[in-house]
Image (cartoon, rainbow, N blue to C red; front, side):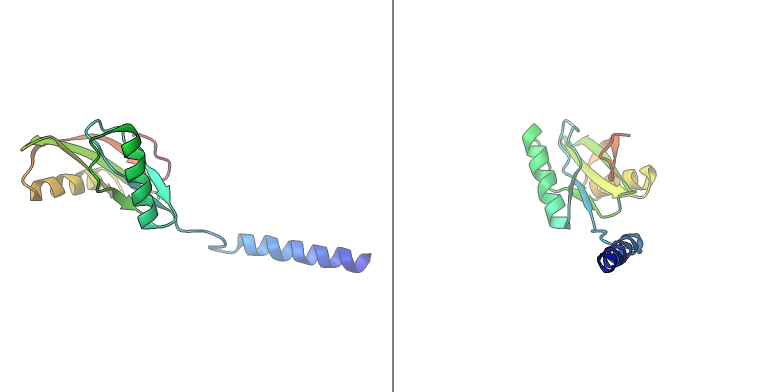
Length: 134
């Protein structure tokens, strides 16, 4: 009986130590948002970039018919998504992720500027890790 108890204790300790080891059982997580004109698209997550993108597209399509079809994506859950919409030459919305609101906003607006859009404004921000609106 004592041999079994010691073996069980050793197995428990080994399992606990493995769980505490850096990076133990941590799977990479991706966040994505596919913006729409109503700016109500949620953040979606996946184990891969492609999975997160597809889930974001699907999530947007469940609530809107104006989805961009080109989700912004990040694997850094500390980042924020900036949702930006522009009025000219026609209404369009996009998202971009970055480590802070200023950079995320700048990244999204730069995409629009390169495509010839104007009259742009930030609608809101979404936290990649939680999906909360900021």
